[in-house]
Length: 156
Image (cartoon, rainbow, N blue to C red; front, side, top):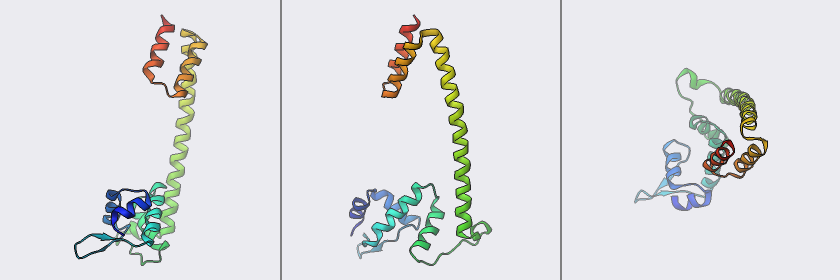
């Protein structure tokens, strides 16, 4: 199959497939006219690539995981950091994700407190009903200028 058909079957773009090819995540056969040609096994490989990248792995780690998953020889880089076993690298990535989750949880806690603090100040200035209306508009996705206008009406 040609690259456009692979893109359609995998829900990705031709540009992304070319990038995967360039990064060594996907390998195409070439016709005499230099068109990229793929087989059915590449559909699963692209889905695996998208899953790994979507999980937050960088291209280098995704390439190593794919090589293991598809029983290919894995060539680790010669640099010292590249010689860490795949399991160790994945564990480091997991540790990094855990740290980011903890940081996001702290950020969420601070923002929640800030929202409540600001809502309390607004309630004193424009009233609880007006703040409740603003919160309802925000939850409904109403444009923020309307929310600001409503708050301005109650302030005056």
